[in-house]
Amino acid sequence: MSLWQHWHGLLVSCAAAGVVGLASVSPATAVEKSEDGRRSQKDAVSCAPPVIRDYERVLRRLPPITARPRKNGSLPFGPRGIFVHELRRRIYVPGDADGQKVRFELLPDTPGGRVFNLDWIVKGRVRAIDRRGRSRGTVDRAKWKFGRVGAAKLLQTVFGLRIPPRPGIYRAELTFDRGTTGRRIGRIAQYLRVVKPRVDARLRVIGDEVVPPGGVAHVQVENLGTRELLDGNSYELMREEGGAWVPARDDANVGPAISIGSRSIYGGLSGSCERVPIPSDAAAGRYRVSRLVVVGSNRRILHLSGTVRVG
Image (tube, rainbow, N blue to C red):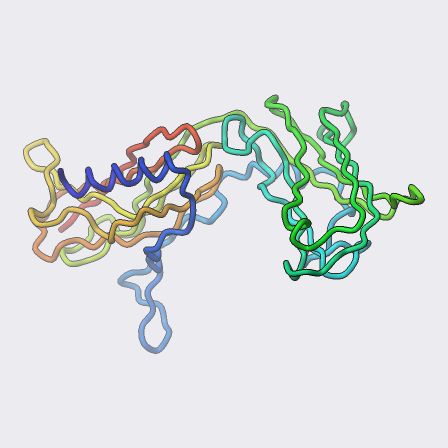
């Protein structure tokens, strides 16, 4: 079994186990610098911006939401030491993991023995809205009560609200009332968008059209679709010979060290620029850089490739 096949098996096993995290192999720096800090023209490349297809633009055109936590996540109406965290992005795709619920969680600053006397009634609601922010009906609602709550218990608190799979724009909102008086003390809200699942990815080869032997090519995964991609760390370098693709080297055809970890590339975003060293004894000709990515929760494997000329 080749090293390429071995990595393929690791990536599939990783996806099946639901392992998602930062890769242990650092991405390459797209623009190298000399010792005095100036750009080196040899390795200067133009990477794609982080956002290549802006699925959130329609949300930014809606009336601004003022009911938000502070920038550090703390609640302006809550006791000190409680923070709120929204667990998902603002773009939801039916079929992705947690793709059908918007989640907020409460985080105490100290998970120890502290007790909070909250006296809260929290009501959650998701509304379908139009492009002007006007309500088109409630699609889900829920209610939670809090009295005296320990920090450890609070750490396990998640407010989950269902989102329909129907593409559209929605507003998720939590209101906070005093349990003893019923007085409204605050609320937080967020816009979100449900989009159709679509797979559209490519491996972009960046930089010079011709790379010298011993030089470096740069590649970048671009996710133009809406489905989340899991991007590994390894690539395969092949050269064209007699109309067929053969390994660029006999002893090793895989670049960076293999890692079970993977990086998430959400819809509309680009991955990191990665270095692909060209062997110093590489013959002139056309070479293919290939990479495997996994599509979100359905574990479909995509084989992405791009070509570079060595000379």
